[in-house]
Length: 317
Image 1 (cartoon, rainbow, N blue to C red):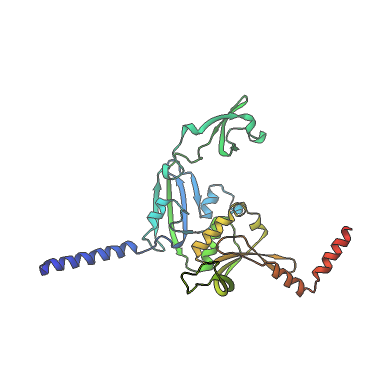
Image 2 (tube, helix red, strand yellow):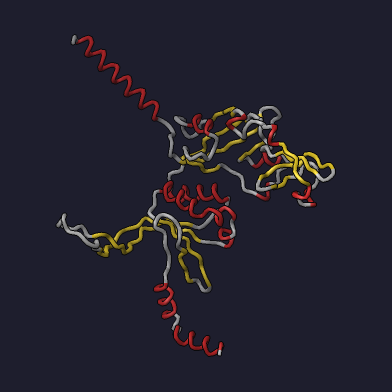
């Protein structure tokens, strides 16, 4: 091979490496950012969503019922439209963008077959009027007309068939763990919670590796101390009554464990005079106070558990 050919090969390799570096520069999948945005339908300019309180107020939205401001999202986790994510990749804090999202990729194309006639009896009396939003057989739609005992209901998304224009600004990149956790939880549950991280030392049972490869029988275990990176969340009445939390706390906890790279999550609630109790049964090795902790609490309070049982049995007699 000639020197000229070798030089050309080296130059091509350098150009390829430079191109890869340029591709990976800026924000990428997995980064957590604060995004300010406003989305409107292209045809009529109907407001779809916004983080700007002034814009919401101008559109007649009751701004007292919700908080406004840049929202925390994790790139690559489908927290926003994929087309918008693709536009953000490679950009930096302070950059702005505008993306037009086709109806098929926004809220779907309008489907005439989703406009169906149902019995009027399936609709609550208070909702028997054109425009009312109703749930029928597990599907959400809005009433078009009611004639006699039949109702015409459109089960398409209200914005189906609409292209959407999405204007955004990258306000900040979130690197602080607590701020990141708070932002993700707020995005998922629409509420702020008291939370913090701690490294806990806990005891675990681990299998003892045998030197004899041919040895058969039950595995042996030993108790070892290991460190667990733990996210603590303070439970509130609002959290325990939150619909998303009640229906999907296992999935939410699993997402948080992965996104925040923690070993476990413990949700604590305060009972009575400040005694904290962990609530177990969650994902990622999560746990809380057990029977031993309760016994210790009773001892600290100088309460005899056996006397309580005797008094209860005596009352039943």
